[in-house]
Amino acid sequence: MTTSPRPAPRIYNQTHSPRTYSKGKKRVSIYIAWSYPAEANRAVDDLDNRYSTMAEVRRVSWPNFEPLAADPKNFLHGIAGSLELFFRAWVEFQQVVGETTGHVVPVFQRCDQAGYQLPIDDRILEDTDILMVFGLDHSITEQEASAEEIAAIKKFLAREGTSLIIGPHHDVGDTEDLGTRHLEYRHHGDRLVPRQQAFGRYTRSLMQGLGIPVENRYGLRPMRDKETHQMAPLSINRDLDTRGFFEGVTTFNYHMHMPHYAITEEDSKSIHVLAKQPIDLTRPPHPFTDAGNKEFNAFNWMPPQGERAGDVMIVDSTIFSTLFGADESLKRFWQNIAK
Image (cartoon, rainbow, N blue to C red; front, side, top):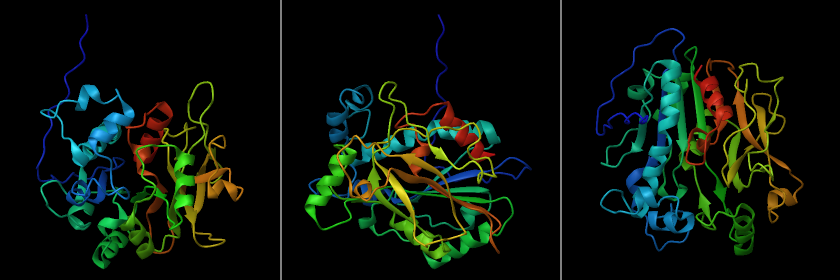
């Protein structure tokens, strides 16, 4: 009889130890652009623009989370419990990238559980080659990139061999029309998502400050194969993929509501759409599909230009999480990014 190896012991409340640069070994850092207290302390009787409580997650997804979260002596309930699911779901990404690069992958938070605040500055950037900024902050919590943070990231991107990955999540129900909000809700079909849920005020302000002509819009239901229930293949522009981001990659993981990364400058030559995701057109209609769209932008890339020596990529933060599954194609994508 074989037994699974015990997981490594967890640590928390530690000061980050800088990683030493070694040629060919990228140092990857994750930055969560939220205030954990601002998200966890949202009033649960507010219907919109908040995370689900753990009770809501358990009820909608029953019995998937019962072995983990049914006992309040062993797992946080309320909104805080839902936030902790993200950290659990990033572990496999950290492990895969750690094995690929030989470096640990730290997770920084703009404001953490203990109230420590950390803007993006040289404390993060000096030992980072690939910075991942996850826009999981509800816009109502008013997180915005400061002028100092934007300047620090510009300096970071002036360094050869750097990359910035920006992942604002969806923007659902961006209208005062209640009927349209419900139309969007019926399209994606996730009972845990409120009729209005706007993410990414921090990442939007960061993109504006860096001159990145992209905006996260909507929450669109990706297409899956009817028989296998696997994700439909991405539409990949391999001719433009000179970095090899999509080498050996066909699909991302499934998530019920993905943002469309709209390019806001017409005929922009500075940015390329490398991958589009087909939309599930069997779902109820959505204003985006009503306009004739059958795919949404899933991965945008800005190669180095001018004083910016680093790459910029825009892709949803859920792509780096196992909360919604991870297959070999997705893990290959993680490895390609890390390399």
